[in-house]
Length: 260
Length: 323
Image (cartoon, each protein chain N blue to C red):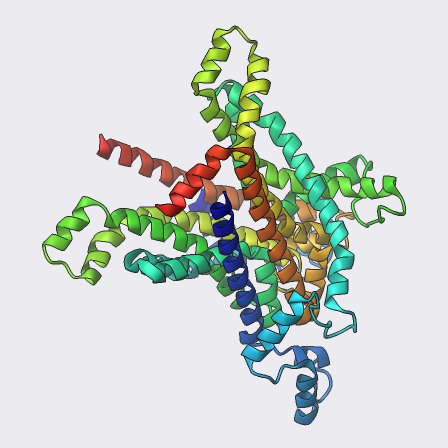
């Protein structure tokens, strides 16, 4: 499901039936019909094509943000988990503090400072998601470090760098994958929310959030306009969450069989 | 108890200090000049005029001294003056707070009602059809952005049945009826967003209580199922759920940002968005400080409340802290 959504959105130029930027191609505010499956928007643009192209922006922003969050968060968590002591304390308190700032609010602050663009949005969203990733990475690292194979590796004279890269990292990778999936869902939601309040992707480009904002303004004319992008966002987030949940379940069942 | 209280207070203050620092630094370090933003790109500005305006706004001083004077003023309740209008930030925030508080109150009320209905239903037969249905509902609920729920509600109640208004605000002092009518949709939107978290948590803690010996005793005495549920299981599982409720109150205070904006309610959330559009950093900073403080204070108070209500919790936490 995740794969299908990502593929469809990334290859939208070949899939989209019409030009998403062509104004007045059809009558405005058409409901779903044979030529425009999802209807048209206030300027007569084909909504299905706009959603597909919007999906590309949304998905790209989400992927970039997720990667950024993963890099910052893992480094953050590794540093805290491996070093422990005062550094651990300082890093984790900072993570707590960052999490105490409501994400939307912090996003507002950053976006209003740097302006909204396809570049700034993933960076801001990625940064917002990194503290949770850091917390998770830290707890995973700490658990791994206390396990027996680490003691064995230490005894056989592994350096710390080698220990982390060749022993600990592969073992926490599945947990990071779960976090990756959850982060992707959160990134889609954050991007949509920021765009919906007008501080995300700016027209004429449009992510799903931007489309919903435009559709919401025209909710009295037609409800298709806002309903389809909303549906797209929800399904995508649901898919990412469900994917994360499934990996976690597999992980748990594997763990329990190992323990037995 | 005192020791627990002091420790908890210290860590709250630490979190507050760090987060305030972060907000302050984010605004200063990130590119984007409030003075330029104020003048706009249309007019040609001489460097002298720019420097003068910076000086007036105090932006030419070293970061540390800016930070210290801002914090010192904030402690006295003065959050500075808006860069655009000549209003005091404190005044702007205080004027808007009642709306946000009212909305938050109703959101929590709805969330509590929904979860108190759903969680017991779910626990009655764990793994049963109803439990699984509620499980799906919560998973889906966790994946829907709050404003999408709002859109759906508007489509159904304002467009289809035309029974509730979708935008606007009447102060409580002018007309109670109109005020409440306008509050219904935003509150349900927020309530539905918070419900899945609360249901999950409540369900887990009720299931745990259900295993305990005193429930077996109650069953053995021949009490009816509903009596066990509502007199024994539910009250005992409410205490752990209180912590969660504290967190939710905190999140709701920030989650109202979007809800206020989409329903056109003049609370601090929409103030934040308006000033973000205008790049009015003085106001954003003030609003951020207010919301963060509220968040930290509520979670702290709820933790205290839990400690007061349930001594067992207090003991555990102290032991954990000392370990």
